Image (cartoon, rainbow, N blue to C red):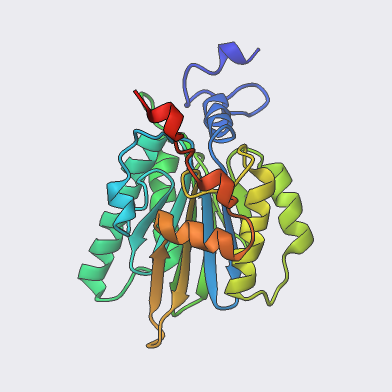
Length: 269
């Protein structure tokens, strides 16, 4: 029955459904998981990377740049970071739009854009792509972790339909049902950022497809306040992620990290 009504986003089915938007959400459910947890003194984001390989050039990420690997977690503004799940090319377009919106707000009002307003700006764009002919929905969901003086630390989620909602803890991507159940069990109202980091790593270790956690499969970021009470975004580089995992007892064992060295008999010609 769906085939008669899924050729365009502007056609409703008799049940009142827009199938193209549902298909976009299905694409997101196959992407690497992204988890966000809101705490009383910060926000934590973690994401599973799908594009990995020994030949992948990660020199930019190793330098500690704010871009991470350019796949899952991005800096939108000095007070907002975002995690994405879905089609990365679509995400790149939305990330650039969000950065421009944040800079326009800063230029006009000389203050950082409120987190919810930035989410609204992106959702207005995404909603338009579900209503006009000749366009397809963005196949990506975003988590926005941010801080502003109005509502302090905030965590929002938006989907391809243009809807957005605020959360204390949430996740998007593959295995999100399992992750949501774990978050419901272990999340506490007055959780600190350190406890939130531990919770996120615990949930990631149980929901990621890989058997062991490591920097080659994980992106991590936090948003806290510095000594001057200004928002401080930190996107971890690979070395910092490995150190964080070791501190929480989730990193690879020494024998897994060591590369097998050839013996003297093997190396003899």
